[in-house]
Image (cartoon, rainbow, N blue to C red; front, side, top):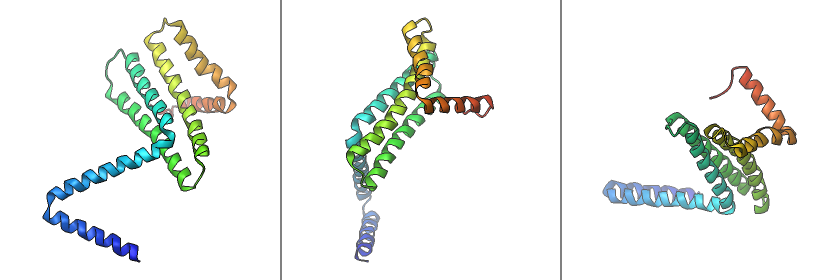
Length: 178
């Protein structure tokens, strides 16, 4: 009950400040923005390296997607790539939040994030190599790496093979998402 009273008192004080001083609103918004940035930085501290890996791969994915299109900017593809990148980062941050709230050890958090990151690395690598191969079809090294990542890795990891087969069936039925 006391906490509720303090909360409402704080809100009332802010409202009074806002009524009399617009400059206070700007300062309040700045403080809120810095608090959000600090919160995100705190979340990212134990997974800093994983976030950097995903950002680098996401950037490479966008670059090679652009290169495959002969550097003709396609807003729809760029937005889709950025949306996927944001989604991947959201998944990682949500995993951190959930494991923190459940009071799971930091080493276990890193193990979960590592697994998710390796999955993302594989998908990004396959797409980057596909686009690179499309951009430079005569490059035998890239063609070989794309073949290995796309087909041989799938054969070695059974659950990945099952997923790939299921995904191909979905495309054959005309239910593929562009």
